[in-house]
Length: 112
Image (cartoon, rainbow, N blue to C red; front, side, top):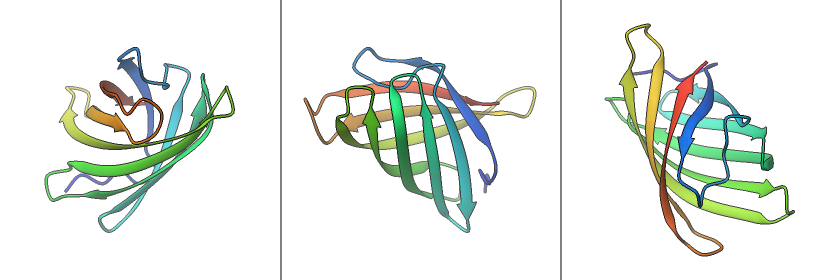
């Protein structure tokens, strides 16, 4: 199992309807199969996620955040890991807002 504890991630791409940018930093913590993260930067004042990690490192999560317009936004996300040549983790994310316009998107974040 991939362990995400104490790893830091930064987005490298996102669809237009997403709020994370390359200025957003995610600080991951993991205990057993429970993953949490606090994040902020760019358009996001503060965010938090909680998820479950399966035996192959896939993550199913829920997130909530306050954006730079003082809106509370919520969503769901599934992340699939890729191990890069340098040993760092890249996460391919498929997400959906559960607030606002309820649109879907895709993003990629990489371990820093």
